[in-house]
Image (cartoon, rainbow, N blue to C red; front, top):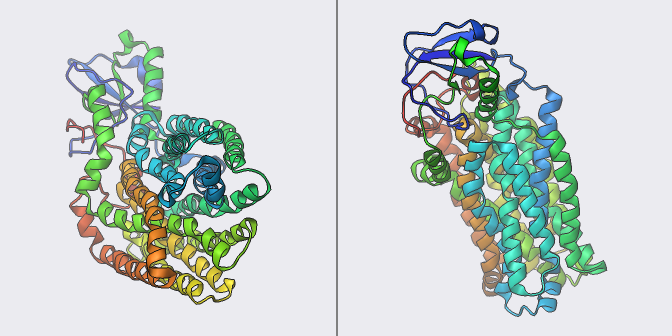
Length: 537
C-alpha cells in the first residue's frame, strides 16, 4: 500500500467518504511506501497522507484481479440480474388464474399486477445506485436482494389484489439493485478493451430473464398453482444469494481504499510517524456525511437533467424496455385466443424471444471488443466511447422488422412460425442497442457509471411499467398489425439516428459534460487522481 503526502489544514474527513474528486492541475504529492511509514518525520505543518494502490500492478486493485476472480464476480452479478426479471414476468401466463382467484375484474388492474414490479425497478435505482457509490457495490447488492427475496415470497401468500400489488412493488424495488449497480461492478473490474464480453453477458441477463420466466410460469400455472410461480423463484434466488456471498467481492476502488486507510489508521503508530489522518486519493476535501448522502442521492437526477447523453439514450432505452414487457404481456393472449393453444404450449413461444436475445448477445459479445480494439488501433491507440456504437446499427433495423412480422402475422392468421421469426428479430433488435448503450455509458461516465445507469434505469423502467397498461386498449382498438406498424415507425424514428448522432458529435457532447471522460477509459483508470481542494460535485 502506498501513501501520498500533501500539506493540509487541520480539518479532517471521515474515511467512509468514497467521493472521487476531479484533478485541478495541482502537483502530485510525494509517495511514501508502506515500509517507510514509521520512519516519517513530522513536517512543519500538519501533513495528510493519502492511501493509494501499491503501484499499477497491485493485486488488491479489482482491475488487476485474476481472470477467474473477475469472471466469478461477473457471473454472480449476472445471476442476480437474471433472477429478478424472471420474477417480474413469471406471473404473466397465469394472469387469468390470479384474476379469478383474487376477484380482479379490470383489465388494467390485471395488467398492473404484472407491471407494478417494473415500477419498483424505476424507484430502486434512484437510491440504490448512489448508495453503492457511498458504501460499496456488494453490501447494496446483497441487502437489496434479501429485501427482494422476502417480498417475492410474500407474493405467494397474498390474499387479495391490494396485497399482491403492494408486495410486487416492494419486491421490484429490492430486485432493481443488480440493474442499478451491476454495470458499475463490471466497470470497476475490466479495462475498456476487455469489457465488452462481460457487459454482453450481464446485459443479456435482464432480457433473457423475462423470456424464460413466462415459459416456467405457463407450466407452473397449468400443472400447479400461480402461487408456486413466486415460491419457485424465491427458492432459486436463495441459492443465488448464497453463491453471491462466496463469489462476489467488493469492487469499488474508493471504498476498498477507504477500508484500507481505516484499518491502517488503527494499526499505525500515529505519534511517531505523524501520518494521521489517513485518507485515500479520493478523499481530498472535507465533506460532511449529510452532504455526501445528499450528493449521492440527487446525483442521478442532476446527471439526467444536465447530460444530453443520458437524455437521448434514456429515451431510446425506455422505448426498448417498454417493448420487452409489452410483447411479454400480450404474447400469451395471442396464442391462446388466435391460435387456441393451451397455457403451457403458448408459453413455449417465449423461447423464440429468448433465441433472439441469446444469439445476438453472443455475436455482440465478441463484436463489442473486437470493433473497439480495431478502431482504437486505427486511431493511434487512443480509444473513445463512440467505438462501442457500430454494432448497435443492425439492432435499430431488426426491431421494426420483427414488429411488422409479429403484428401482421397475427392479424393475417399466418402460421405461428411467422410470429416466432418476428420474435427472434424483436429479441435481437432489443439486445444489440441495449448492450452497446450500456457499454457506451460505462466507458463515458467511469466512476459515476452507477449514477448514470441508475438515471436511465429509472426512465426505462417507467416505460416497462406503463407499456403493458395501455397495450390491451391499443391492440383492441387498432389490431395487432396497425399497432405494431406504429411501434415499428417509432423504433425507426427514435433508434436509427441515435448511433450516427453520437458517432459524429459524441466527442463534442462529452466535451461539454462535467463528468464524462475525454480520454480512453482504460488509460484514465490507471491514472492516479491528483490532490484537489475542489468542492465535491
